[in-house]
Length: 247
Image (cartoon, rainbow, N blue to C red; front, side):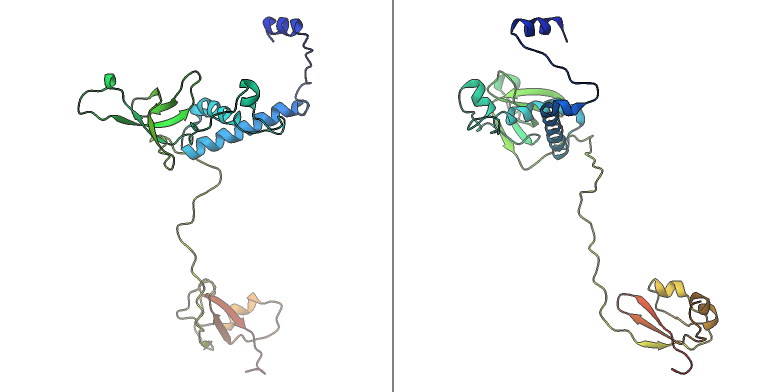
């Protein structure tokens, strides 16, 4: 702490208390507020497709809106009303990071040039009756009170792609329903070999079963023959085990 702050606390009769090392639980109110702000600006940056380097602008806008919201600590008023003694005006609030068409003043343009420029809305500047914008083309900030907002579009920055540890995109293909057409019961009492792996994976063409090669797959059965295979809907293969007395 600075000497100026210590002097101020002593003059005002403020008793300072410190939390112990690595014990954030002792300062729970402030830590919970920090967590809320961090979660809010993370969502704002991801939704607006903007890089983390603009976290300061997002935090300033988040606190500005937060002070206009009611809280359980103050009964029947907002922090803005408790400090300034008047209700906040929320008509100027906009969706952070959205597309905005900012008016170009006459001394900043020539004849037949566009009167608007595309920018990103990034906040509410302190001490101004206007909004703060960022122009990706010129890489400059603009403060203006004349702008048209499209709060449905978040263009972001061309060279930045927002990433998430969780894939939030919808699947491109929808899995098809299994085929309900019944297949024929095939008599596989042939001499040729069968591709068992191919049959299990849905290969229904040219399947003949050699009982000597398939018998080791069923060591718990003392049945010498496996004469039939049923192909069920959905490309599943069912081995029907029968003894010589069942044939």
